[in-house]
View (cartoon, rainbow, N blue to C red):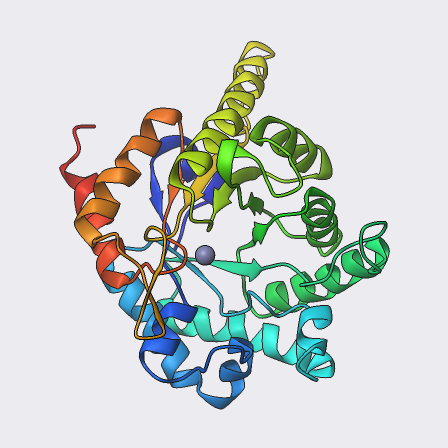
Length: 308
Ligand SMILES: [Zn+2]
């Protein structure tokens, strides 16, 4: 039976899985632009197989196939009504595939719409959509909610609040950072960590993006903010685990080869680059776009070889 995630992160590095969409497209289950979530009902065996490949490679935590599963995003594909069923199925599939010893993280990505005042999505409507999605993922057996690839801090905070209202025992909130370690709206890792922790996240981090230096800088700033809080918590004599930091980058910047996105970072390079993140204080490591079970296998092996 899997132990408490927050207590485990305080003791050890936890390896998460890699990309979902990359594999589904490479295996021909998904065409670009199609919602991957429909496969939870139409091709469940493929999703279970992907989860198992990652666990066999060394992942201790897998993400559900529900990245675009909020009803706002699914609405763009005419699937809004199916949101609860697709998310619950995503979590059930993952749990069935990995058993009781691996953590299942309910993935929640952006709505794809800009929030007011820049766009027309009401922040409360966004929070409701995330609340509904988190509820379905938890009903299906997710251990935690993993918010990811957010570029708008306001939307990420709405997702954290939605997950908290749904009763998520652990919430990890990840954003995507570009040049200078900032989101496209100019938010840096320090401000992001402060706001997301204030909204109720237990962990903060970065994922996706194709600017390796920018991501590293943002994660370093997040880690510094988290370290301050953990030092303050230890001084105050608290014994519950403090916040943690995660990093799940892409396998480099994709290059277009014969009309297809090819990610250049090899599994070995990826593993070496990920070890650098540990020096910053990152406790949860994994991959985003372009990473495969082989990238996760190389990462897990590199961690085992690393002196404790
Ligand atoms: Zn990505």
